[in-house]
Length: 109
Image 1 (cartoon, one colour):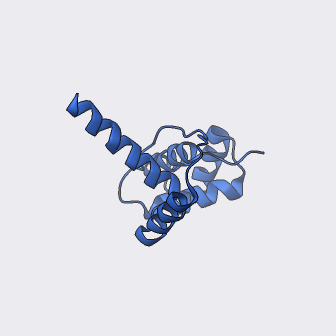
Image 2 (tube, one colour; image 1 turned 90 degrees about the vertical axis):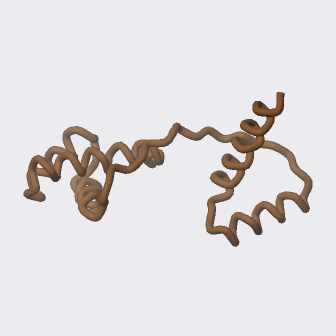
């Protein structure tokens, strides 16, 4: 069985919050999660326990796809160091940088 994507996890956590709001009894909530999300009872418990700690719904982001580019070795080293120092995932850092570049370019012309 394939791993859930980040978007799937977010949707399942949001669903778990809704289930707990309607049926706070854990066994009933697990049954609903298993049926609706096609997960094992063990996974359902994990989602429900996590959902109990959430203060608000989890934002569901767009699905990500691989995008391979070739960059100079020094630039890759610097980007990885920056991502590590800032606590960001490499893909999140690059996504933000590209989005900022595209917004900046659109404003200029």
